[in-house]
Amino acid sequence: METYTAMRHFADSWGLLAMTVFFLAVVLFVFRPGARKAAQQAAIIPFVEESARHAGGKPLHTFPHAARKED
Image 1 (spheres, rainbow, N blue to C red):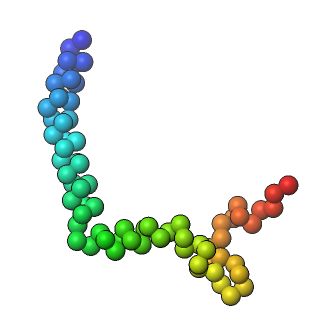
Image 2 (tube, one colour):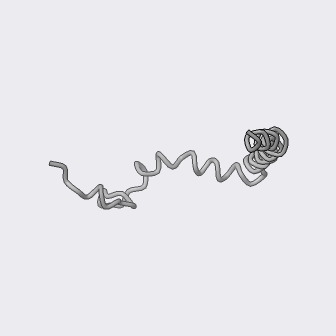
């Protein structure tokens, strides 16, 4: 029972502090000045495949599993 008690005290004090610092770091990272452009580019990723096609009608990036024919 001694190990459980020691881990519980650690989680209640330093663990909480570590999680709080991690949360604040993530929030600051997301709201940094240069994040808007990166977030806007990431937001259009699902729509890029439809608009980014060669003249031949093939997508720019193909995956090996996409070339397989289904039975």
